[in-house]
Length: 146
Image (cartoon, rainbow, N blue to C red):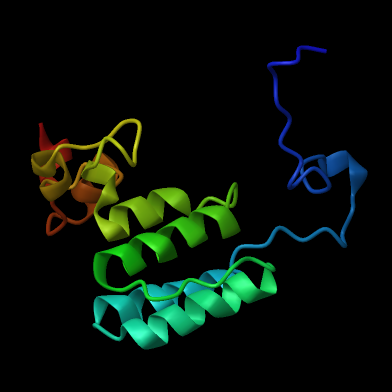
């Protein structure tokens, strides 16, 4: 075995269709993820106390130290990092990076977008040509129009 290799087994029980393990559901949304989304929304609205309480609810459940006295941008960072830890490997990171604008920050994202690329919709999928032919009112996102 290569000591530098890693194996990700979070969904090992659902990755083999031949195993037919019907009790191993793939989780799309988790309560902790929704609580942290609400905490993020409250922080964006300026309700730092409410946001911090929700963040600490998740941290207490994980038996982690509570976040105290943090507010503003530092609180938003703490909530983002808690989502990173809580939802690791569940496919939420890209959406979190886009939603929070961190996708343009090279320290947060290996293949960061420039602000111009982000503004022109590089974070979206291109619209298939077939769809635009069927409905002429659909136009391609500016980034993908070239």
